[in-house]
Image (cartoon, rainbow, N blue to C red; front, side, top):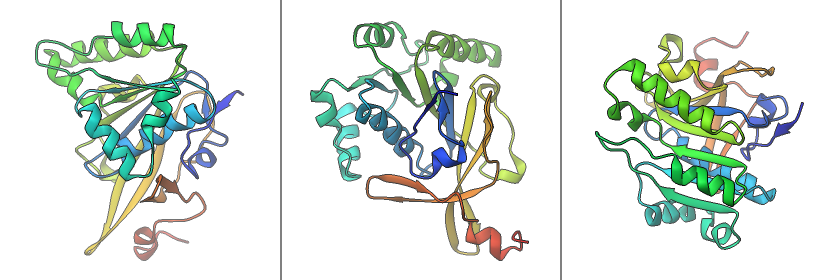
Length: 233
């Protein structure tokens, strides 16, 4: 199987080699769980491999986004100058969803191989009902079938034991969930791949940290908060 690397240390091991070519992945989590950071690493990994990438921001101003990346030790402007990463601001309003025409033109003209949308959540506010939202997301995924597509989305319920599936969960090929596990006054970041259509993957909960240059996952470890609660046999 033809796998693509995510650029996140430890995550490809959970995927047993990487992500299938031209898959669609959604990264879900609450505020501060690292969704945008993971998306950054994903797009930069493609640039390092000579795969042009398109990063679509639906919320943050591009200059602020560049500064945010630089604070993590990621120099986006270097890859922009090399024409390996393209940044586009595509805001969503109550009357207008993200226009896919500009991204599609960039994908064709620049031979883009990876696309990130940060974030998908605002789509919900541009449609009248759940059916309309589902159709818009499906149309977006279908338009991006020729690239490796990653989107981020907010998740209001971070309790992995009590997850409720949203409409988009059924449409994307893969789901990566980021959360914070609490033990008294201590929090630990944890990652869980709940779905990856068409390929095998590890289904345990794994700890990760955010440090300089981004996220690092520990696929051979168990979150210490779960160990203390007696989950280790």
